[in-house]
Image (cartoon, rainbow, N blue to C red; front, side):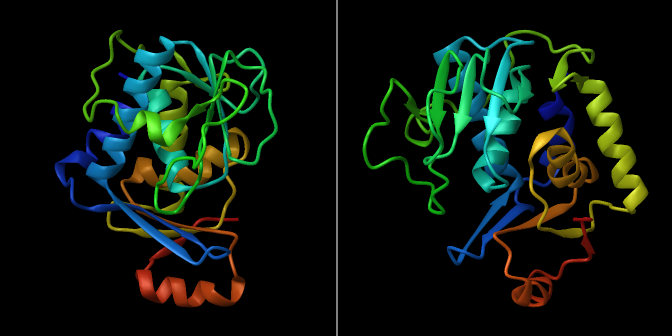
Length: 236
């Protein structure tokens, strides 16, 4: 079973529950995703990767994106179809980059993610044969069923397998005392495997609601905690 299946399956019992809240203090934006909406974005991404790029278990997908609600859909979608997520584009089947990242990525295909707080695609088609991720994946299906079984020993995050990543995320969540009742505040970057693991997968493994603040204004964090009624902070 894929890493995404393992993470989302127990959460879908409460599809309306808030799962991801993303603030960007630089833009002054706030976006909240329920479990169902998060699963929907992940399914669209997985279907798009499978249908457009023939991504299969073990194929490499590079995610060169900051901590963001759109990055959640990209990561979960990539894992759902069995991809191995890395952060370097060279040799990848697909590389996901932000709107200002230089090209070429070294990947077979490049998908540009706008990171627009309202979820809008690019105002103009990207150059160099790249794809507009938000505009194109939005047309993909809302439900996803893997075409191939995803064994637990399939590499999921750099060299770590599905089973290893899941076990480590659960262990770290338990060490922090996190549970499904928690609302977790984080300002942690998602760079590299440790950032992705601690900043995203640990709260998801606990079933907790993640409140992530990008470009955090330290003076506003106390107000964020009060407004979101957070119960724990992720270590920076």
